Image (tube, rainbow, N blue to C red; front, side, top):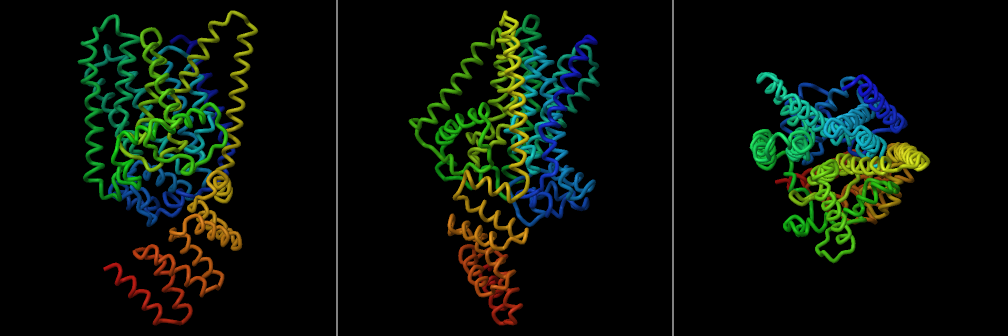
Length: 538
């Protein structure tokens, strides 16, 4: 690489970092809420290094008393390091998310550049990845760290793999295996950060194939390459298989296996139904990429399980995937970079598709965090190809100006979207504009109002939660707590009893009712409550 090329590369890296900071700096003052409470703020495990073994033996939120089905030791380690540095200081946690996001964008640029020697398309892809407002669900939301952190380890391993492959002929055997072991360790760190990293062997295989196609196809026969690639690919594939087996056997008792999360029975049982359901959401994903407005977290009322190919969204989704697949196929011979972009997105999207392992959240914006890089690269390639074919200087200036405007608009939309995550009341209020019948959002809004001392709005929010879902025990329980707190003890008893009727195995409403009766100096009623719980728990 000449000095000029190094200088240009450093300028691009600097531009990525600066734009990333500009896009997200207004997120630093945002509060922590929602899953942040269970994963970080109230998580006792991360606040004492003596609990380190529990990071591996228990789930992500066990330390806050709310068991989940997420086994993510590396995420707990990261949270613990952060907490020991700055406690619950929210700007510190936001800064870490932003820095990992910027690091990922830089690695994406370097990977694409080193693979295809296409500096401009690689830079465009990295810039889109950096500033696109879709990324806020993973970056501005502190608990979204699993996406950028797991991708960081995968990108680091991919970058390392490329450098080893390029320098393999001149490396000593000892140096080769040391570097290869580092790649393997990075993959392990990705796996224990987030389960979806299991698809990384597909990225390694894709990268290996591209290196052969771009650099070695004239000197290394295809079948010779296949044999060598199988050896390089096998350790990663075996680790993925082993992890999947452990996650569904030894680690099954963390809470639930990845596949046992609450999903419709027919969806969980039939792979065809899962394929059709995924095709249904593909058009939404593409519309969010190209028209990123109206972004929000909960989309449960927008999509559902589909079991017919005749659904218009399913047909459109199938058409989009077919078109992209054909483009990838026909560009493979002369322009494999397009193929790489499509397959990168497909591989990264696959774990969130629900096709192999059913997913409870059929559509989430953060599912696009890693796949967006591939689509962005295709946009960068197409845009630069059009630019290069333009003979008119004015046409080139117009296209470059349009690109600059797009960067400004995307950055501005990201800055605006950061405000959606500003604080809990803003977040829940804005989300309810899109999902006006979401009981959980109303319940969480009520808790936020109550924490701020706004008891009137809290009561209204809890009633809305119950109206949206009369079978939601926590809404009754929280309303009971509010009445208890404001001295309306008879009303509180009624709500606690409603919560117990709906969830007789939950200790919380029994405990609250027991305390209330003691405060009323009614020890016999308090004792009866405990007998009821003990009778049921047996």
